[in-house]
Length: 246
Image (cartoon, rainbow, N blue to C red; front, side, top):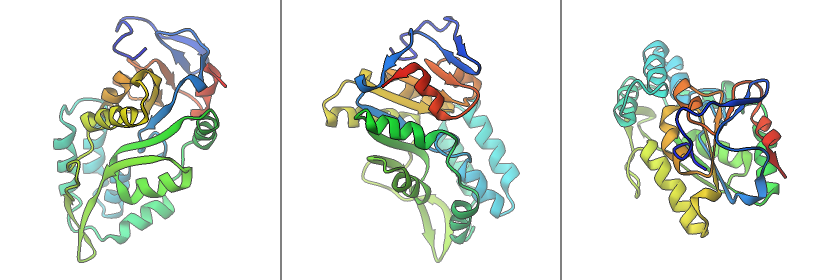
């Protein structure tokens, strides 16, 4: 059951402190799912990479304000929001990316345990992010994820241009692209979207969460918490396993 199939006014039940379920009776069987799709920033990792790049350049406040408004759903078009933030990064040295990864990027609590449990149950793993390939490919390798899609920053003469590179599938991973990728991977695997889990925290994760059989909101913004089937408000991502039998 996806968020859109549950009534919007259905009240979430707190089954454990800080763990809320809506629209289903736990436990669900993890092995009944075949794919799990993750957002990256503030979901798999504890930072918003674009904000941290801006911090290195002394522009964090401006960029972070746009990021927060976007994740709360106050800026309707993610593409417009991202382009505004990217423009503030024009001229930032490429070395800032390495500094963010090495000094500031950390996996969120419980992520490794949850990903391991999904893999042990036979699920394929997908990272689909509105962030950047510099970070997503490293996180993908670290967690041994099967698939990944993210935006690629343009770098010229060792500096960010404030633009993204065009890819065969397009330019920007936004909410619509996240949904499309999840559905595409399901089709390639020969499984129904109802056999997918989508995990995110922000408004641009709602489209993919709306078509998945189980939507998990990790420390979410209110717009996401109020529509997710499982919301983790406290603790690590592995708390999802409390309602997912092996």
